Length: 352
Ligand code: G3I
Image (cartoon, rainbow, N blue to C red; front, side):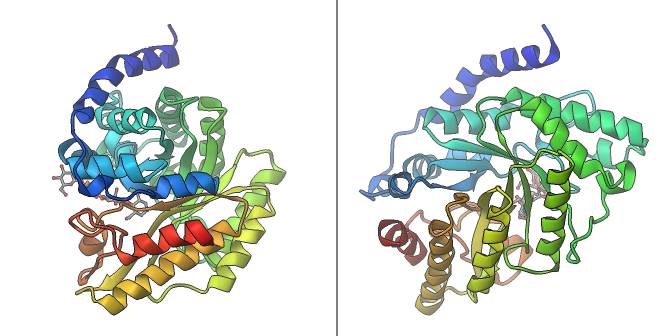
């Protein structure tokens, strides 16, 4: 059996156990109290809507598990499919957490958005401290993508193939791949991903590319260059980590349109809307407005494939740790109660 066959066999072997680990919860009242969950409304609009999902609360908290299952039709593993999560040693892969999230999603009819196959962060120390040659890094990158994307090939909707490669000027930033392998690392990653999974949408994912600016211009040029040179790229993920002041919505719509005109699938891939704490009614209303405005633009753009948030409950969010004094960025509060932002998204899906 070849390596991919072996890895798929292992995958099937651990599926049942991983699923059973999360499937024993009974539904809490709060998670089932919305008669029109977002996923039902989104299905009716042919849109995928859903969060980044973390392993620990998924397997330990029934409110977390049931809210994801009930409310959403797509998920992204927040950390479990990153290099640090799947490839702890050069010759060792581990898929316990990635498989559990993947199997949960498949079992409940959620599409899976893989995240990610090549990034300068969240890498294991054997890679960052390894002092590998260019040829060695090419082999390492290809083996990783072949193993990880190959494992889920045929069952995953999209992969963030390369994550956050550009700096604010729209040029490639330095990092382990750029510095060790050279500027063609992005193209190589996309080629390896296509070989590993011919069916997944292959996505470039980044932040601060939502509007027309130097960084999104750099990305636009890179995508055009790829298309002219036969490098497979199918989509762009606009992360959308923003605050309650919102963004320039006209520029956002214009930016989506120019990437749509390149024939790409578009993702709002990691949205959250932070606010200075404490949350007040006025800030929550402003936040709801921002979420609704972004969703309205998505619903107006046929190339948009998914509207995704980076988490869904304020109980688990990267914002307070990275923006001291800020938080309350998601659509459910810390007790899994829907916030005004949730109601605004539901209303937009119904009437927008
Ligand atoms: O799981 C370990 C734990 O065992 C250990 O004790 C602890 C000590 O620091 O670390 C834990 O791992 C942390 C992990 O999150 C899980 O909580 C890592 O240190 C921490 O670096 C990691 O941060 C993640 C970050 O990406 C880097 O991978 C965040 O959760 C995650 O939300 C964030 O997500 C990124 C996207 O991938 C890309 N776009 C931006 C977005 C937000 O930064």
